[in-house]
Image 1 (cartoon, one colour):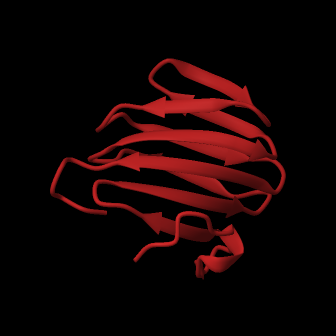
Image 2 (cartoon, one colour; image 1 turned 90 degrees about the horizontal axis):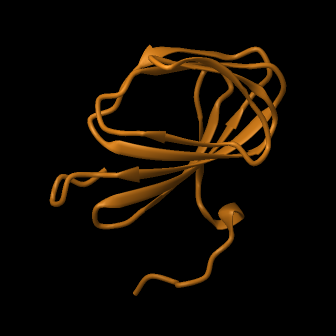
Length: 108
């Protein structure tokens, strides 16, 4: 049985070679991901085969999409429909929470 109330600290952290740390909580057709991005990281232009919402908890940087470039900070929320390209530059240590909506039955 899945616990209904947990702490992010209870979710295993995966750290990439670039220092980006992720904690992934997976559901049937959705995942909630806490992402810690070190200052100076650049996420090159990319897209996902799923819809994604991102909340900026702390930190700051620049988001680039087909709509142009825009500064972001705490309280900013991004919405990327599936296959929508985006890129970002992180000026300071940043914490994001992503909600990734998968196609039903495709998993994370």
